Length: 382
Image 1 (spheres, rainbow, N blue to C red):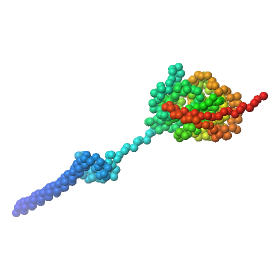
Image 2 (image 1 turned 90 degrees about the horizontal axis):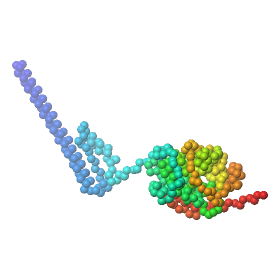
Image 3 (image 1 turned 45 degrees about the horizontal axis):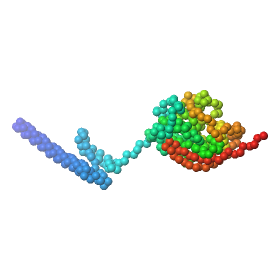
Image 4 (image 1 turned 180 degrees about the vertical axis):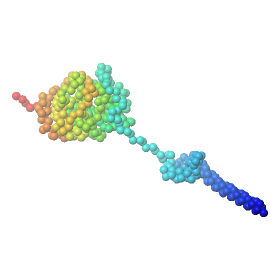
């Protein structure tokens, strides 16, 4: 009797297990077909979207967006793909409307890596403007250049007082354009040409260069250079500094030494703020000499100091030449230098007058021709 009851109990247990297995199988099949139908629906959308983009090129602008899913990845459920699609939907845009924005340029390095250091400067070979132009294809009209691979720290106007120095100008452009490009400077070259044969006035021409360059762009640095001076080292960086800068501190004509402590001649640089602080340069130094010492006095009297490069870097070669006609030494220069404190507020950029005759932009420089008037009659002595 006991065995019979035990057999019936086991039979019931087996039937129950079998029913549970059958129920489990049915549930799995239902779930399987449900998921399969959803996957099939996604594939249909994928194919429809891809065919639509192929057959209708202008469909990208119609407002319909198609999203593509990779359903073959392992360890990924359908819910993951749907969530991913929802996250992507607000940011996805048609390919034809996507215009990549240019990356901002990095600032140019303070010490550009392309500098070569000491340079061999010679004036024996014949120089032509055609040769210089071929050597500098990246310089644009008017003698403008800006480095294409970085953002310059300064925008520099280089101003040259000029009259009857065409041959010197060829050599200056031949050497300076490559140097300035290696220095990663945004710059423009301005030749301020004094027309006529009256007495030359270097400092007044420099003031005019400052005024005219301002009309060309937002320059924040101004370098004033004689046309016959060539730097012998490209590490002598042509930009502005915290204090007014004297670049040409060791010329060959002075034995590569500074002739005296207050010398500020040849090549110098001031920021716009520094230039305006000293009221620019004096206008009343007619003929050769004295204006550089007056400028030095203006700087020191306004609480600034002159900065200079290392003597090994600030070396210059001068193109030998005879003294220009109508640029004889100014006999009044010594008296004027002693009175800088009293004259600098009324004689300078604030009192500048001139007549602009022509502006012509050549491939390598901008030529500005001006009339600056005549010197006042000298007082009669004796």
